[in-house]
Amino acid sequence: MAASEAPPFWWERPDWRARVLYPFSAIYGAVARRRMVAGKREKVAVPVLCVGNFTVGGTGKTPVAIALADQALRMGLKPGFLSRGHGGSFSQPHVVDPSHDSARHVGDEPLLLAEHGPVAVTPDRAAGARLLIERGCDFLIMDDGFQSARIHIDYALLVVDGRRGLGNGHVIPGGPVRAPLLAQLRLADALLKMGRGDAADTVIRMASRANKPVFEAFACPRNPEALAGRRFLAFAGIGHPEKFFDTVRAAGGEVVRTRPFPDHHAFTKEDFEELSWLAEKDELEMITTAKDAVRLRHGTTVAQSFLKRLVLLEIDAVFDLGHVPERIIADTLATWRRRTQR
Image 1 (cartoon, rainbow, N blue to C red):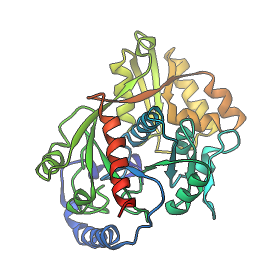
Image 2: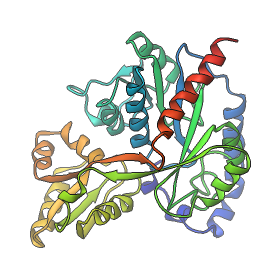
Image 3: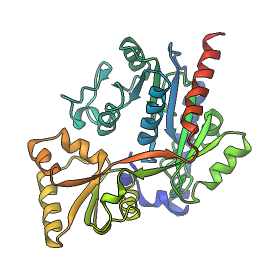
Image 4: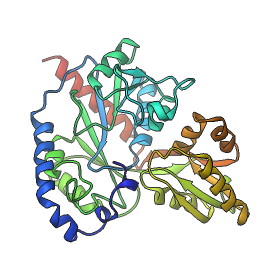
């Protein structure tokens, strides 16, 4: 479930709804904890770095995974991505082909990742890993799947949003947390706070007390000077559309109108007509995210034509300390070497 599809009370202070749902959260949490701790995880022949999060919804994992893949390339490695995907299902692991696949079948995030390395889409990440290894990959980055993957993880980096943190702190269905917090922290190797804000301070303090490294990174727009002084209708179908709107404002763009859509939204002709009408009425340019753009780029002819009218905000995950990506890759490699030498 995406953050934008989740009940709003998940992201507010705990109230009666979270308390009423607590018995169900306890059952869900117990099952999730057992799956994480007792589940058998297959060990594969190459290092596996997982970029996950504590909660449902977008925390900026995909830009982080891309930044780490780019670092792996600079270190002479051949990274590949493991993703569950969003959309179509495959009976066998599928390697994304950007020239033929659509977001409806493989998901928008895998299409973005495919610009930086091979991507295997499958719920069975161990099978996906074997396929990528056959294709020549010697370093695997798992986008999500920390709580449920049946593959051995050499390094688990959990991303937490600085503004939303863990929401109300309750486990599904009473809140957005995927499994009991302590169970997740025990299996994490490090935390990454993404963006400004103090909502993640509690979990960061807990991680620090457990001697887990805590890093920071930010979503930085490319060429922000190109947005300064321009008036926009900003729309997005991502986990936290508000973060995108704020990023446009921070880059100097004037966001006159906003139009949020659910995460992974499949845009329709009616959506295009509505957005065009709103923009023309107030003499605005239209701006959206790279993730939304990839769905349009691999969509219908009408979607591709609409894309040509848009301004795109492309972002990079930039770490507070420039050496951190190299450290994460190096630590993953060191853990893998110890594992394979036993």
